[in-house]
Image: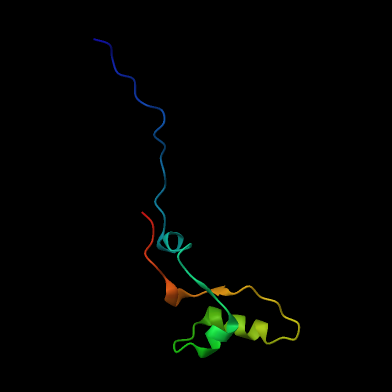
Amino acid sequence: MAAKKKSSKAKHVPKKTASEKYAYTLKSVTSETCIKCKTPCSRGMAYVEKMNAPGAIGKGVPCILTKGKGFK
């Protein structure tokens, strides 16, 4: 019998932290949504202050309240 060789394709993948698991499941919201929010967060309020400046252009901020299920 010939000895089996171990596959070299198996790579060690480090475990993801909770913030990394949910990184792609947060929805981006605009400053208007942050102003109307019933539970304002520090990130959202900082974004609202930034957008209140004249000529400010923004693309939104990830909302922690829209966190979905993470990946394994």
